[in-house]
Image (tube, rainbow, N blue to C red; front, side, top):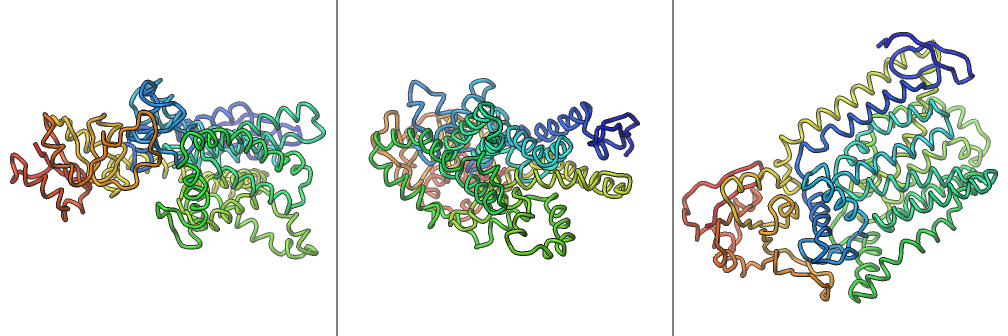
Length: 526
């Protein structure tokens, strides 16, 4: 693992010898940062464009991003999904993904750029948080740890508001914590910039951004970090977020009376007490998510804590014991705890806690691998880093082979390519796969999709354009010219509903074998 010899400055200002590819007993120099940048760039780029949009989430966000670019048909303030108003999220994620679409065209990597941006902001925020605790070396290691943690890597490669929100919240927190009272006006500039980023996090996913804020404030209070709590100004920050983040919601409720109950009951209370979409999980769901998806680095921090348990228990009283725990670790666990207490469960939710854990882990690693006596630790960490990076590359390269074999979460890219090659002019889907429009265009129908309308008086809303009832399917297919194909998920094809049997019975070649693409069955109707 030797990378040649050179010199670098130690933390105490002395010169140290370059050993290996990472800074061990010295401060990172320019080449260290260049190497780290290359590692991040490779991990971010590999796999970003080699697989299709996964359903339903990526397909939905991409669909809405494209609809936003149809400025003559829809209001840019009112999100639209398949020509129907869809108000589950504030509009910033659609604006960002739509901008990528306008700049670079109908490409998967283009609409995923908001997640890449969120990932880069997260890494910058992690570097600032770790620099406060461990200096430049701690920052270098923290960025490496975060970039090679599976949860971060995966979400920065998928179109989702969670990664963009995480970037805003992490960088916003890091800037606000720089606003210590001794910095005067400069500190206020940091705080205002941080507050604006927190507000953009609200415009990305609304109340979800308050979870990391609450966990951060609680962690600083529990560990008695009054200096950082004074810098954060959590109550003032909350008021700014609500003041600058609420206008869109107030405007939408003023335009559409139905959204008052939708926002307050379904989206706010529903995510706490039980979401209508059925996003449920066992009580420890998010603990299990963090234990699996925050690998490979959290066991390193846990092992260090276990070794120091006797010293920690020797402290007098719980107050001193709490002060001895890194506040970053408590903030990370706080995010997991808060989301574990609410009913709605998704593996993406707890990503906002990961940056705090990686910041303190990076600082601990920077100390653990320093000194001549830590050579075995450096080898172990090098092996773990290489294994994590290699694993991510393998997953990225393998995903195209799996993208149509993930059941209802599969991508429509290859099935749509297959029916295009057969000359399809129209596509009928037996489930709501929004990504079908991203790949095929407007000539897509979805049959028997319930609860589509959220408002009734939206300008440019045409539910009948893409959504059909079971009784309408046969008549609509018969009334269009050109080739029509039916796309079914495999288990539906094995046990078709009455409307599907009716369509299949009317085929020009009823005995012709359908095409099969992964978990999809493709049948030519006419």
